[in-house]
Image (cartoon, rainbow, N blue to C red; front, side, top):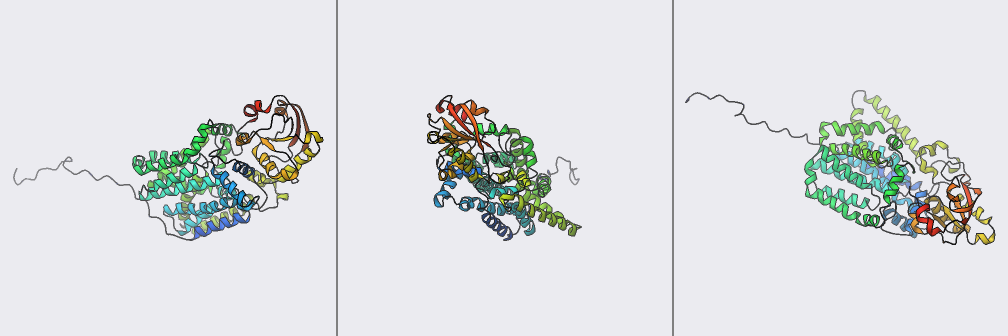
Length: 518
């Protein structure tokens, strides 16, 4: 009706605008502090690089480097190639061999701070994140040795930094950086594929799910897959021996393996001091409204850690993502430290940091004399014990070899239970007049077997002679490994056996009975 206003119904009212997600905070200020701390970390690692001796894995990498290939039973070609390069430039130089890991360790420290900066960390929080990384077990213990783990650490952190930046800015060009990092990492180990699964699962669970359809994200995945082709092709051509290694690890036949150990290691591998900090970071990533854009990072760790437990993998496989959570936790912790009672809270953090620094220096670096290394150091840091006593192992084997009758001495060969022992005898044996060492452990099986006529064998690496007696008619204990220090490692005190009388030729037992993986 003219002049009479018609009633307005709910159907006539405009629909309310959908609420937009809280935008992430801007990146924090740039600061030189974390870079200086990363540089200091590399310098410290280089200063200690020559202490003690080779680790068993380093001796193995040197042997793999003599047989360069696109793949090995338990790893890709990257670290053996680095070992070959270092040993070619300066043979026997432990500092040069470990220089790549020292540099990667320092870069990891700076990257953890850079991830914190993407989350909005101020200067203090960035420096705190860098400190937590610099004193962590995964950086210091890994950075002290040439290791696939240290390369893996940097690869995961680079990919995580690119992912964090992409989630903050929405710029999917960073997905190409993720793909490139993961692809290079897949030439080292297959574990970066686990990170890729975790990130994709995190995005599928928490969003933004549009990334799963983005052409640049798909291109990044294609880059990673393309770079992994050489190693995957090698694995396929050799029947995927990596699966046997994984099954052995899941069965508890390797260090740091077992589901309970994997769970406990989560509380230790960054540092006990950092554990409540990374837990706080995980909670904040999953619940803090301002960090809604980063939910996928929290879920990525949950998925990856769940897969590690389910598969029975080693507890340090997900450690790089723990450092991502630590970066988030550093932001939360610094925010907590400036609230009411700030003086007491800062004092607590300072005391904990001082204790952590001192503990890391003693437990994670070779600061104490090898001759007086306390047992608790090896209990906490298994790898420390595995860098002591390899020349003495060769001396012990040489004493048994010299005691053989001359006719047996000329045709004897060495047989070891693991690749570390074989690597040590390859490194130190020739100067002591020892014959070639063979082993059926991992890729050592592919580097050659004893000739069928080799019926006198000096064997080390078996605590009991049961297995040896299935291959030989006579097995006699002829000595013990004496490393001349009271260190509790895998070789000190092991029996050395002299074996005679092959029951079957090496060609019949090498691939079926001697070969083993762990």
